[in-house]
Image: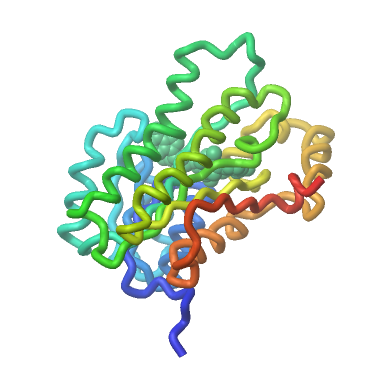
Length: 254
Ligand SMILES: NC(=O)c1ccc[n+]([C@@H]2O[C@H](COP(=O)([O-])OP(=O)(O)OC[C@H]3O[C@@H](n4cnc5c(N)ncnc54)[C@H](OP(=O)(O)O)[C@@H]3O)[C@@H](O)[C@H]2O)c1
């Protein structure tokens, strides 16, 4: 029997592949048989990801600053020439902060929207081009957060940027359904990665215990999210579009 979760024969682009969730998604996608295009800024850490993957020689690495986006079109074009058309896009690149309202300037808003929102929209646009996407269609994942659904003190900036992606996934899902390109969001709770380890709630034991207690199943691991990416990228999810998959150890269950 054919495995509906297999990614054999699929070409998947993953942004944020140099760290955390994006890195783990790249590793698991390679184990499931995909060829992967790894994108982030830090070339050394991208190469580290590559060294953890199955068949490292069959993947491509591009060091690109997604806040600027210059070079991304050429990179995707080159990837399509080398690998063939694309079947999946995981927009895992992102930045996070905890900041009181009085410190949210327009420059900060711009910085957060550039990396978390504009880059995901521009990548989705590039992916969906007829020249780039497989004739059978494709699957795009946008990374939101539980902070895109509920609030927390100091999370206004992050919530604004992450919340924008959930309805965007729904509208793009409708716009591209006829082309069989599916768009879904994933909203994780706190997952242990360099991002959450740098966060203010990880700086002392008391704060970390408090945030952990808000997750009935404890904090997540990158593979808890990467496995869901495999599902959404695979043919097992061929009828899933416009959804927001909350994976949060029960954080929003209350
Ligand atoms: N960890 C959590 O608790 C959590 C919870 C909810 C949602 N999320 C979301 O999940 C996604 C992955 O988070 P993570 O925890 O894996 O974070 P992470 O470990 O900090 O990784 C973030 C990734 O984004 C890349 N990136 C950041 N700015 C970039 C830019 N300007 N251009 C290109 N790449 C850029 C980084 O690569 P370079 O530095 O090499 O560029 C890195 O690979 C993010 O969108 C995050 O908002 C995370």
